[in-house]
Length: 417
Image (cartoon, helix red, strand yellow):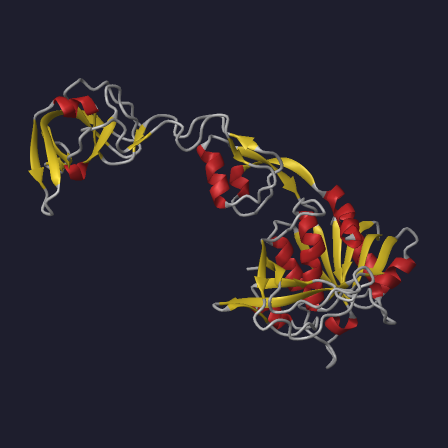
């Protein structure tokens, strides 16, 4: 929790708010900064939910009636004939309808004065528009025709003054649609820092046989951009001065680096911090597997979060620390949908002593099953997973008698799909 707090303290000052036209939010997800109330009723008037005829229920009750049966033998009542006077299309305001008459009405059109109900065209004869008069067939009831059939009342979706969007929402297309329906043209959203993703290491910059393909910059770059973060990606060899020069030349607010913070002889981020007299980095091991080595602070004059180099360690560290901070959550809030599940067959290996273990799992028809082992290089298994599973520390100093979870325990999980 201490390291999580450090990351939040590093990233939170970089977050801001701005008012953005909703048309500029269509492609880039943003988190809403302040709650939004509707200035209007939605819909703004009583309107028809069907193509048919607007009429007063009293007109039906006072018209000629006869009893009938449908082909299944159910009782129904035929009303009319009722004269038809005009049409109201969506977007138009119709004239008042005289008692004893009906008017054609299209879906979404305002109910004209003098009417209180809508009859679907399928319930009329002839079942077509531009008829001088119609008869109407409805199921027989003791109460007879009542006002309100197929009418969307004013404010039935949203009442004026009602809160329609709550601060903290990650805006979805539906949220933007609600704002537009309420006549809201711009929203106050959280802005995010410009992030430079730096993958470090001679092994990812060399063409030698000992080189490897860089996965970290892709996984982290995709994770950041899907939060709406303006992201630039570079790779840097194990040269501390080259690392400092590259970051100083970049136009960014935050650096997220991978690798170079463990206990080897070529830990380039640590070496760069020793080279920079103004650096204020904290490098510390945390009680988590994978993702033990971590770093955070300022380096090269820039806010910096340093993640481990193994790809699963980097991704899990991003989920645990960076993602919730960028979402503007509090330290204690969960950044993912949290569920509790039993593991099929229980644990497949003993968890490490005194460390939170974060494992990958897949939801099957029979339940949640661990996939792959705990090793931090098994990115393919992570890609196949649907959940992260949190296995609490065992045999720690704070709880020396805590046993390892078994198959009957329900463990906390984050849904990652």
